[in-house]
Length: 253
Image (cartoon, rainbow, N blue to C red; front, side):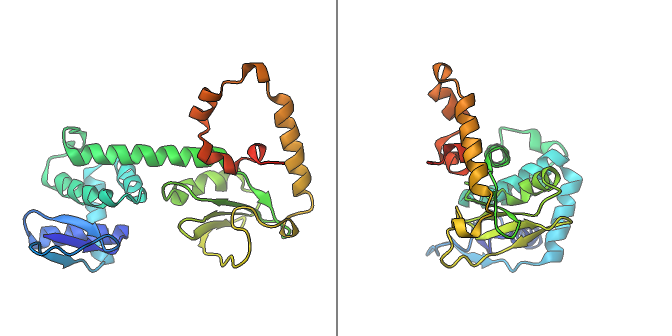
């Protein structure tokens, strides 16, 4: 039996509820985005039901500590196709066993979630460290990103607390949605870019002082750099090349 979900977290949790209600025996879970019908395997399309999903989440809250609830959520945010089935099987495993079952790293689903969560947390920390804003002409600070995982929900509080006195937008170009902080709250937004450069808005759209700030920062970075102590291998370990596009000091003058 293959359970098919819409890809949402609520859909995944609904699938867990349906499995316990229907007791179909061994089942796997796939997102509709990657599902391919098989000749000799039955399939069941799960209709997302928020009340059922809430009941499952409430049950997991009773069975798991906060750190494992976060790992569950982070694993979902990884968007890795195989992660959906591991999350599904993990939830069933947790409900069928005594408290503390999540500590059994001999279980393949426990191991998988631990691995996915570590990767997502690493990407979260790198986004918090490497995101650089550009000030637009209307006074909003903008950053366009394309992280490996869907980390916007995880970095929202960090930037809200760190930049509480300025309006900002962080936009995930890969997933086509972003966060806008309006000095009081953070809201999810979508933007129609049309001909606007998504990663780096055209100079005409930027604040008149933005180019000067960029030049001053690059000059400071060059003056503070000690060429004799350059260690490229170590530098790449801490700042992988795929993150250089976010850093003003790495941009070509």
